[in-house]
Length: 395
Image (cartoon, rainbow, N blue to C red; front, side, top):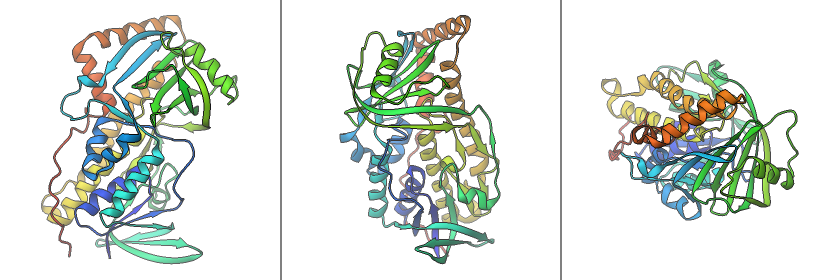
């Protein structure tokens, strides 16, 4: 019997697999789909997540190919209303974020997981049962079914989670549903160390460097949105981008449209089964909080499982995982909701108030620090040492 079966081989599932395997647990990660190689999806890793990934060797593995993001700029109709520097952060060794494609992050995590002794298999979960001692999971691969037993199950299989559905857990909307269009592009003339949110009465544009040579461009879709041509993205960049940095779109690498929602599962745990990442909560990409919050989930859940298997019921945080993470996620989601709301303002009065608020935040040292701490997710999950690497003894 396995100690832990993880369903889903995205950043959340692989981070959990790495952390658990490093503690000597037997861990298998099941993935339904092959590794992703299209557009970059999530493209920023904030300092708190970098702290979690560093002991796995993933932070160092990603750094050479990643863009080093040292600040976040905000613009209103092309004029700066504040640049928030990550060098203000305290309580972390990282005064920067990494801009890097998600498929690179997953490749580095996969290598770290296998190096730690983890097992990665291609299969689809089609059923599960559990009792007080184990979870029995039915999987299908190449037309054949088998049953895998584990002491704990982690559902990290995304927004359309099969695990969540099999457990009968509902997911409730807590904010609006919004549609976005993104492009990964080669753009000259833009800062290579700054992510930017550019807001205008006609719509916004988010800009983020990643993979050293590319930028992510993203905007909210409306019925009158332009097409996906390079010329259309250039026009939006010219109309909405910073006046001080006239970017030129040289090449479109990929484009994609998607609908995002703000939603949280009603429970994160049922018996020995636990949800993490997009299986437990989803949010729009404003503020780049989604993937990072999943990595934080993986760390908290792995810690609870290790404590449970090592100490039993006497001393462990696993029983509190669901309630604690729901509280944390709602705080993180507030940052994403705020970004979405501020970027969607249209009236002159609301825009003027927003711009005054951001300038005041930028100029006030305490509020400036609070802003970058929220973006970095250090306000909800401060770094903690995790040097208890002794093997876990399981019965």
